[in-house]
Amino acid sequence: MSPQRVRCRHVERAVGFYAQQGSAKLELQLKSPTISDLLSLHAGERGDKTAYTFLESGSDQPVSLSYRELDLQARAVAARLQRSLRRGDRALILTTDNRHFIRAFLACQHAGVIAVPLAPPWPLRSERRVHTLRAVAKDSGARAVLTGGGADLRTPLAGIAPELDRLEWIHVDEVEAGEAGAYEKAPVIPDDLAFIQYTSGSTSTPKGVTVSHRSLLLNEDNFSRCMGLTEEDTLISWLPLFHDLGLIGKVLQNLYLGAHLVLMPNLDFVQRPVRWLRAITEYKGTVSGAPNFAYDMCVRRIPPQQRAEFDLSSWKLAFSGAEPVRPATLDAFSEAFAPCGFQRKALYPAYGLAEATLIATGSVRDEGPSILEVDLEAMRKGELVPGGDHKLVGVGKARYGRGVLIVDTETTEPLPEGRIGEVWLTGPDIATGYWQRPEETERTFHARPAGDHDFDEPYLRTGDLGVLYQGELYITGRAKDLIIVGGRNHDPQEIELTVYDVHPWLRRDCCAAFSVDRDGREQVVVVAEFVWPEDAAKSGKPGDPPPSLTGVKRLIKAAVSEEHGIQVDDIQLVLPGSVPKTSSGKIQRSACRAAYENGALQLAADPSARALEGAR
Image (cartoon, rainbow, N blue to C red):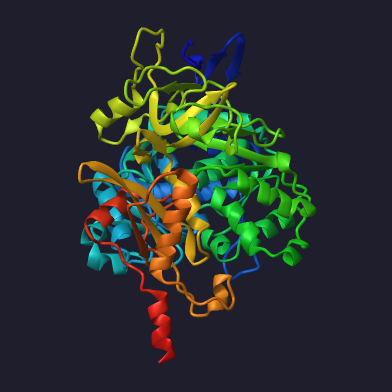
């Protein structure tokens, strides 16, 4: 069989490019060469239109900004930046306030300063988060910190990260609009960096992905074309803006379209998922989306009687990405909210990663998710065989300049359709590389498949495992996370899903399965967060006696053995919040493995022992 690929040739022209897909020629012309030019364009052409509406915690009075107001405020902050920073300098953006984040980011674009969005290290007692902040500040060579609104970060950080206190701190909420008069247009060009997106680090130490204005705007064009979005859409989001899905997929996509985006604080959704669907209802949102876990939360935490208040008939596109898309989640959400007017065909699974700027492939709008039933045993051997009880969700096809290739993880030889391997991507919107890491940039962003083939474009190695079937891409796991036992591949995410269902006191989406090399063989380890509710009724099993940790471990071993045919060699039940996660909520299996091997896990107390103590 010949290698399976979807291949596109492209030739850049002015600020656009032509993409060749078979005999179809697609002309993609960008609206503006840089983000700064795009904002200025909208301020001139649709200045009075509302660009962003901010729903603020504890207030029933939303705040809105028109495109003209947004541009003015961004220019004012840019003028402040130009006092001490030069084109190409880096500035950290450190705030949970959506309004001030957007002002800060767009001010960087106007000033030619490279933005570095970061998750605020909250709570500050989290050594891991503070360490990440310090490492990114050092790696990026940042000269300033842009912040505003919310809690003061500088004062408490001064004691634990003194090097940050030596940077220039600019509170964007203290900059007056009148300062915009001092702004001088920076000579920004399409190949300049717009920002550095530090990767979430689910399998390795975070690295700075460099994103140029050209790559960013081409990816926004790809995003809007794949999903069929227009300036008439109303977007709704609670996603954190320091993460690429929230920043590129919502804030900058809205700016690219010239549409209207309603933003709510991330914590508002986490505390009460009902607020997300309530916002879609109130503002008649047409486009919204989130990772898989958010749809699960809505089903679990919004009771049927509360769902009656929603009208989701306006919601035409509900994308799911940033983590594996689960068929059971799509089914449960569709069924639960169909009485509210939600249509299953609105569900839109997509695949993306920071190194691809954001979106890599997307489904076809209004066709609903593509679910493929396959043989799990064959999948473990690296083959996709239709027919079976294991379901995979398709994440779309290569379109609009994208090329997709599946290669052998060991030899990098291209694989035929139906064979599982590493997903490689090509296209003009791929990010430019890793910040100050030339060797890793060359290895990751300029890969060439082995063998005698006519692949003339460099490819991006994603580190993800996947397979092409009838042109559709299916993601099956992460190459670095694979657990190999007895010559068979096991996806840790599938093992983790099995563990979640073992007992209600095991926290969902808070488990890591990985392997360690011990005594000359690969051993399987499971680390799961265990909650001991003060009231047994909260467990979902009213009246049941508290389980022992030994009993729960026995259940986990039996479930994994039955479902996956492998033995779990060690199980560690830990306290809530102990399993390392990225800022976007992805499990950091490598970090969890390191904590396990170093004896640094925070083990949970045995609930049966606690129950005896309480009875004394």
